[in-house]
Length: 80
Image (tube, rainbow, N blue to C red):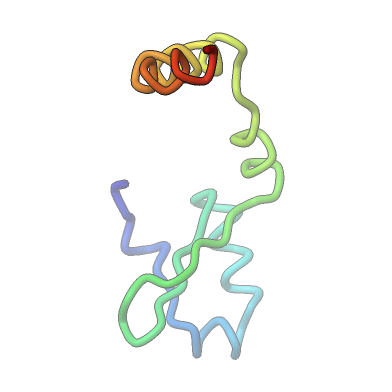
């Protein structure tokens, strides 16, 4: 993940002025909250997170095929 330094906000600044956080999220799509100068939290728009939860059938089938291939011996034992 490439991080834009303009999206980084200290946790103390978040506590003092949350409206700056919302403005950052509106502008960049997310804000990174720093705790002890280390990235700790990501704040993003609800709609963005909800849309990222959707998995296409094709992606799901690919993941399933990969798991089945990786665990073929176990599935064969269970089938007996």
